[in-house]
Amino acid sequence: MSEQLDLFTNYGDTGGYVNRPASVARALADIASGKLSQRQDDLLRLLDTAGAQGLTWRACGSALGLHHGQVSGALSNLHG
Picture 1: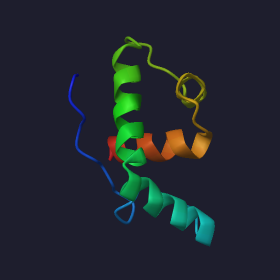
Picture 2: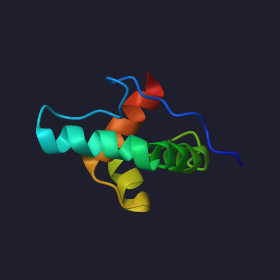
Picture 3: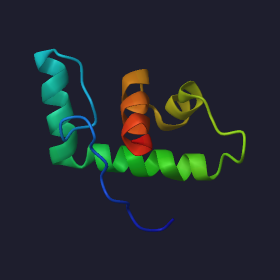
Picture 4: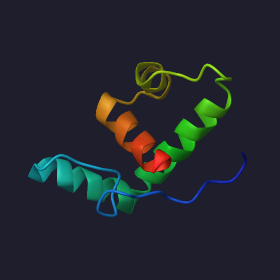
């Protein structure tokens, strides 16, 4: 994969958030800044190299410097 993929946003046109003002603001900022798109692209590239066994959210987060919510939200959107 050499080009950046389309953005997947199944959760209210965001990457997901909890019902807290800071979480909603972060979700919207991630879209506006391109962070969500980059995160999804990075996860797909990482998983593409993982082989048939795949990776846990923790392994993905460790490799990319992301916390559970960032990994889970991006993967949920990609899965959807």
